[in-house]
Image (cartoon, rainbow, N blue to C red; front, top):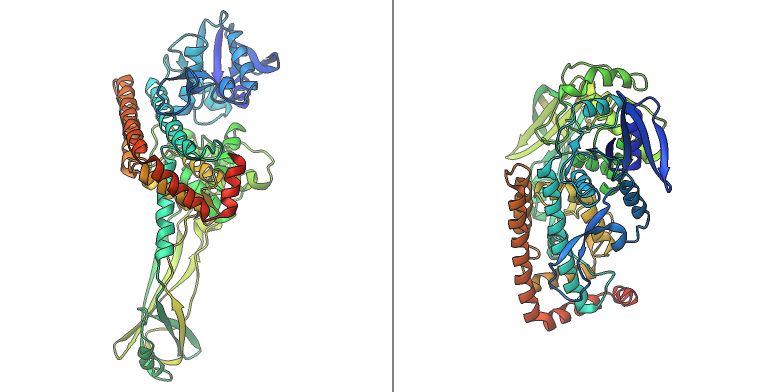
Length: 582
């Protein structure tokens, strides 16, 4: 009998019904699995429910540093009793399974889920591997037919390394904080959370220390026959006395210089996860974590490809024509390109996010995200938009005024995708005109804007902090710990105090470069000829850093306690809440 291991129950059902017209659904003490036959070969499709094993201490201890850890069933460490049933269901197939195939999501987390099931339940270190980017019948059948004879050990070990590193950092640093105030539920920090919090604190300081400066924004209203246009003075006017020379322009004759051009505006590339999260926030104010959750549901429903991807590429192998033909039953569009517009970003495991062409009735946020993915995909095959541009300029006594006017003359892909070009137009031409009015508006320079969850995800990606799958979760954790608040992210007094104390404990905790170095080292595992050796070296380096941090902590413990208490005094409500939860 061959056992196929899926990552989640919904995926198991998709695989079973893709490989057989009539799989038999059974259950083991309430846990579903499927029996089917292919060429008289008995096959069982069963699933995990995400990670069935997580890291924990071998023996419970107090204090820190702690390095004596091992993989344990998740139900022993978290309130997830249901996970025990899934482990027992797999154990039921121990004697029967002569062949095992891992069919979890093809990424480091999926590989690790399958790898842990293999070694901790079946006492095996290898199995066959199905690779797929969609849960469609065609892709799953192909993945089974072309399955590999081995799992992706590099991905599995890269995943294990990340979990080890996050545990070593997270537990030890969090215990350091909890040791100061015994706030066991609220004070925590992680390997990437620390540098992320520091980024937000730095922006908070920039805003607080920003000193606004007064300036004047000057526009002139130009009239040429029946046509009018507002032109902007090219610089900010900082002194009020300088406004006199502008006000003298009223009713003066001026000469316009008009330059025209038409440009093509290409469609945006297909979505990767970060781009999807940014657009969903821009259009619908959906948080990055909410968008990822919805995209994951759409993937499990077989409606889109795997969403945790960095790629902006759509390989021809996905079958453009077939997908577009299926989509045409529910969406109206015209295709102008044989190959789609693509971006530069790539991903070794998966293509960009694309719709499979399958359809289901959706509503609410799920429909919004699905429609957005479909429209982005279709727009990649549509005509360029054509934009008419008119650059209008004028000068008088050395004062230069300019305006760029835009008008869409052919919508192309803009008909499909919800992206708007700000249009402003006037039929003024080169030649004489008159200044009808001078408009002066007093303004102040503005501090740098606060980050939104979406812009912060983009920044973390740019800085190579965290992964496409974890960045949204990192931000959510900062909210959950109440270190930050608001859609325009503001650091709370508690967050400011935590950042200050982490800086005082050791600069290594918030070192963005160090965190990025670990990320790059873990990426190297994916192509390493000896991933196990790479893992050991990274883990040992992490332990050494924790020991250095612990040494600094012991030196300054009393000062650190004073800092965090002072930080909490900044908000009585914050202080009371910590005491209640402690």
